[in-house]
Image 1 (cartoon, rainbow, N blue to C red):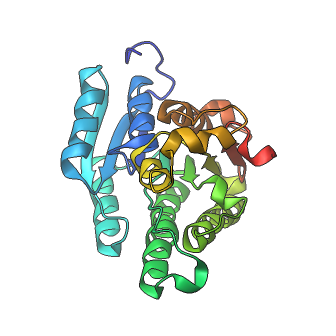
Image 2 (image 1 turned 90 degrees about the vertical axis):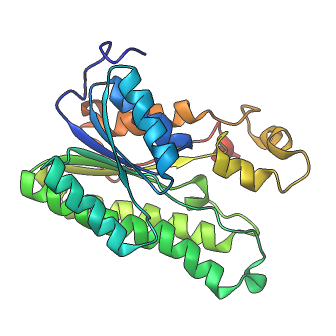
Length: 257
């Protein structure tokens, strides 16, 4: 899509964390194509800058700011830079996260449990705190948190990840109520199996990889990052102006079985 085709986000500054790959990268590119000034935030600097160049190459506006969602000081630095360089934040997609290592609950190391919770829950909470303070002061904003269908159903060998994504769903619902009457919307995207680097690390541990895993999806395939990005961008847009506290599953029908 050419950046001049749809300018529905023109004049808006939108943050995307985890924008160096997968759903975050696809959403950042789509937002740039729709006229947003995109803040590409990611830990991997080379990949983050590549996302920026892709957006700019299509005629969009983007800037890279490094962030490690596991580090509170790094998150503070991200939002200090946003305030200094942009002075506003109209939208945010809190997409950064980790899948963790598979293990039965009693066999999981405490350090691994803490690592997953720290990134997926604490990191999202810290971002929300900054974002909602900015949006409260300016009187408007839209936020989408990326959870997972593991936030609405359980998965074996995945207690930390499943717990963390249930927590993101809960954070979303609670945050949505805090400022629902003040022009701030908070919604949640729950992807099913999606062809991304993170999903590949998980499914490739099992025989048959993605091809075998996708047989259990009613639509018989994994989603594409661009399909999930469309859903996230919709919830950030004015088209979703009456949505807050919603949990949108985009999973090829997986959670209907």
